[in-house]
Image (cartoon, one colour):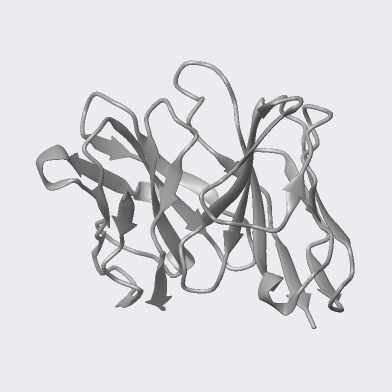
Length: 113
Length: 115
């Protein structure tokens, strides 16, 4: 069955530290890849997405993610986190051409001021 | 900024009651979805719709039903609520069109507690 794995459930960082959140999926076909963020008290919103082309995609607020097809991975990165990045981050995979979106269990990031 | 609304945001209700969770979007999106999310767990798709009068069950078995009589409205109904229905319910929609169609826009969610 298709699945999405997020390796870190909880991450605590100090401001200005670098961030990398792992995401791996299991599906052999064509996929669209997403990272969503949920700030405290707010709804899920799109951080960045990959459909095709350059495997390094840039999103809002300085986030970027790299799609490595051979590793079935779509890791999220930010070189220097801020306190306002405290949130829960979800990786999601859409099986291209289908209704199916598969979400990871999320990573709770806490950034200490 | 996506305009997708869910009401109520929080609901506490007794076992056996019938409830309807409302979801509306003003973006004219054809595709709409209902997910169930428990703390620390992934989102599970329980229903989706490709358009008016088109609804399908998702991968997660659910005792709820949905309807899609209007493009903008996708309510979810539980005929008889049980404590096992306690969860957060998220509504989402996607637009049609090249480059945008696969991005889901989410509502704020409804947190349901069944006593």
